[in-house]
Image (cartoon, rainbow over all chains, first blue to last red; front, side, top):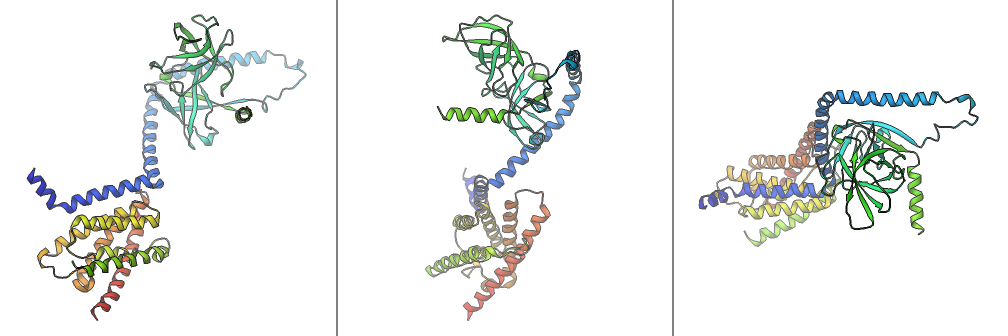
Length: 279
Length: 171
């Protein structure tokens, strides 16, 4: 101990230098927005690039599943084309301008960072504000099921707060009787295959196997199938039910997502805000 | 250390910082070279001040500069680095017992010693200052050019000031 003290004392200039230097650096980082930004941005770009590289491999390994899902989707689209073609268009007298009055536009994006194991999962996709993505847009999965909402956008990337996140509430209805509820995840449940529907009043009759669809509020188009009820016997003690839902989509093999652009989202938001103010 | 010396140093601190902040802050050549004359105060602090006090003075001076330059921490770190180089250089080049001059100024130590001493100290100070300001190695050559050109400018002003005041004192 005495030797250590002598050693420190002998080279006190150096140790004092280290201490003061560190204090200086800390001051620099704490108080200057520019230096802090450089550090955070450079780490972000390193992390982003690493994930992008890793994803090339992952995408290759999952090709089979993606092919299957694409084929399935193709089949569905073909079916709908057939259905459209069978309509006798010569008989319609009113022309509906579907291009200008289309409320929802769909943008597809590739997932470059998936996350399912955390308490609050956020995924990253390879489209950003340059592609027309904005905050709070709804995101669905290519087949069935919802993903979540856009959290942050940069010019080329966007992060999505998925359903597997404590802050995500998605407005849903029971398909058979239009009872409103909200879809949540969390509450000691960290299984990415199930979620809960809350706030459906007790007087509705619900069976196992009933389908849950989106309600049309909160950015999602109406009627997107979310999941099937797998358990109804959860006691809550109040006048609302909690239903367990088996989700249709599998978050663990997510590769592509569809981001939904709502033409009227800002209009709806403004309207709701002004209505609130006048209460 | 007598009270006259302390008084001189305090006056010098105010004078140099005043000149630095109100005059030299606006002097810049092609966005590349700008003088930091205030380091002269740290260079000619008297011998015999304990290391801790030296660092504290450097820290305080840097902090004052940062307050006026709006770059909290950058000048502070650079000044502390300069102080380390000063202590190390004086330890290496001078025998502690045979120092009879009060302070390491040009007049006391001779041009050769002082020029080398000032060059090394200013080099360390400017390298830390400019790289901390840029904070990335992307523009390494540009930052280095800025640091070196500023070093030449600072060194020039430091030596000039020393020459002027040295002559006046000895007369």
